[in-house]
Image 1 (spheres, rainbow, N blue to C red):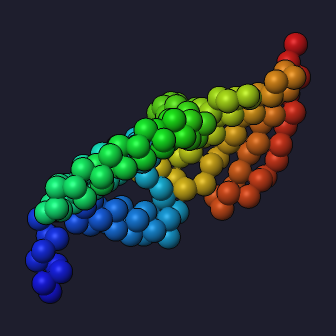
Image 2: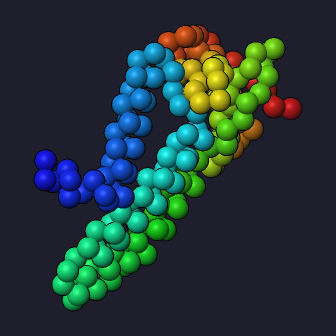
Length: 167
């Protein structure tokens, strides 16, 4: 209990609580065949990174010995400088543009991923926080001009694939 009282006033404590709530609520949604929309993960990622950085700085500043505090801050700044390019590269590769669209008179959420090729994945829209877990349709546009439509059932299994000719 003393540990709880000691760290209850730190940012990392609340950061950890937020992380646990996010993970548990995501698992509940997955059991119901739903998933958070992309913007929830983007906001959570921002909160995660900022909370972690500020929380660690707060813990370093709580150190009583000045020399250890300075060494800790220098090492932490070096770690941030080293990790930042890899973090930005990770977000650049994994990011997808999210939109709510109408497709065949049905409201859907699309995720467009563009790296070497273009992939548009359609999910049924539920509300502004969540969407269906499994895709309904995926459009793939390859480098060679190939265009493939993939249709899915309610369990995410492929129903059919159509190869469209680009002319």
